[in-house]
Length: 536
Image (cartoon, one colour):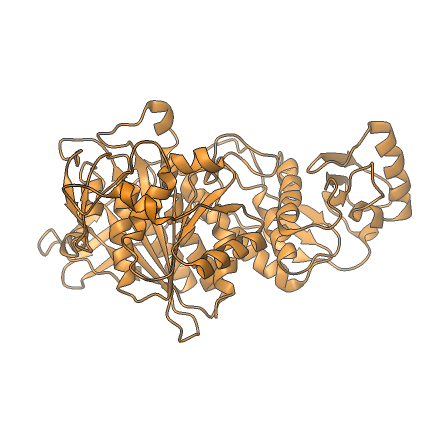
């Protein structure tokens, strides 16, 4: 039996209430005498938590290494020969020159070829990935090259894949190792016939053991985030997310509190409760703690966890609603990052705060024109029930402030306006502190992930003022919607340095890329790990 510290009390008298779920992560029990939440361990249930892949270092000549495939790089043919292809044995190089000429290989960025039984190497297949005009791999390209090879090979099961991308150091090596694992992680969780198959073993040449260790931890965290985002909403909802978070916490040594609906009412989390009011699934708020070895104040990560968003009374059209299982990607990012913090044993204390709700439609729905009193005491006039994420975050940010964090990052699939502004590959970044903004951007650069700052001028504050409440939950019309949403959140962080990441664009891929399956991306997990590793 796993016992999770909680602040819940029984709402069913002295009896024990058991709630079974379709998601195989346990049975909730409320027990008034113990005042804890207990989550029963899984027995005989399918384990979707981790697909275990061994990542190892190999030594010795490449010619003698047996594997299903050897992955190498090559630069664009129009330039001088570059890439790890040209470090292979002479027989292989001679064959490669003939092959390139005969097949018209260009070596453009992420161009991929799988060649069967070339001479001079022990691997059955040689996988050649183009790097284009870039002769030295940076973190972004190293990740994508490795992930493209992994995805290209994942069409069928394989025992061992060997990666030789040349000598790689530091963050570039970590990104490459993570990519070699994540390219084969897809959205086929519930398919009988899988579409992607991870190899049993990934072997690396030319990287340090520490890079392999860190790269695997980064990859496992991203894989967790992707899995949670990809699960359908009848499997993953506030209660079952909480069960999963408890599993992660116990395994990794995190502390976790689970606030149930009664506790949320006692804490006056009225905005969060209003969003959840129409759903049959009760809300939850999670507090996760990685204590670290440092005595510094914690850094707070705050995640939006709308496990399904219908839009409420401001109902979304069906085409927009279909992918709204992904509206908890911020929550998944926070949980995944905390898992990595614990596994890396980073010094910096990191606390995670996750608000979990469904935004549904019923007679209990919150309404346009309602005025909500948030936990902080600020009043909010509702102009759109599909602008619900910021209401959830308003209360969760206020909870986070009570733990006196030195800095805050919130992560949310918050606005379609950010997608209009920056597209589907780039996360929007908004902040009240220039140094903290720069630190987050630098961490994203180290991970090879794309973020772009948006302005937080005072003029945008005017757009969220209400004549009958302190603020309203949308701006004026269509203009600057990503910024006015961030301005709303800024009302709830006080003077604490804070950065808001709007991941509405890159959190969920409608179509696959050469280096990633469609579905949840796990974007910003690796960036946040880099950020937290380098604090203090």
